[in-house]
Amino acid sequence: MWFLLFGNKVYYDHLGYIINKCPECGQSAPFYVEQERKKLTIFFLPTFRYSSKQSMTCTGCRQRFDVAKDLKPQIAEKLMTKDEVTSVIQQRRRDELAGMPRCPGCQAQVTADMAYCPGCGRKLTGEA
Ligand SMILES: [Zn+2]
Ligand SMILES: [Zn+2]
Image 1 (cartoon, rainbow, N blue to C red):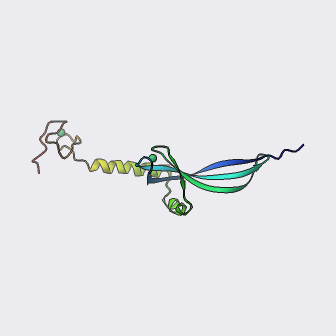
Image 2 (cartoon, rainbow, N blue to C red):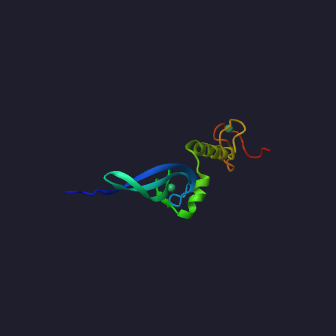
Image 3 (cartoon, rainbow, N blue to C red):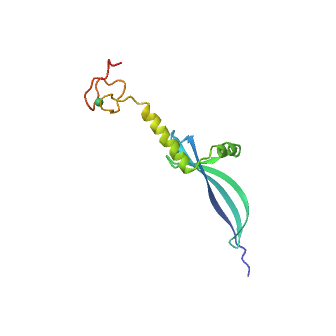
């Protein structure tokens, strides 16, 4: 008696990362981009592929999104390696920090509405 075993095997190829605003959590976060390949298996042997869906997963909230077919070229252009994504995020943090005012006395971070530095008590307003 013959059993023909048909099945689906799903492969995920990791393509890279993109940074995008997440519709789910609202963060501008790195997304993990994957290519899904489904293969029809007969007798456990993958035969041909019949799906090439792409998905991206928000690394902030773990929500997974399907990538629309016409968005694939745009995503391909923006793809980054993990190292690139890490350096973009670090650069962004540095920029954010650089945009914060600092106490000229002790370099503590202060906000514009503080009259005195919480670190060293130096008067912050009225200085040129
Ligand atoms: Zn998210
Ligand atoms: Zn200070």
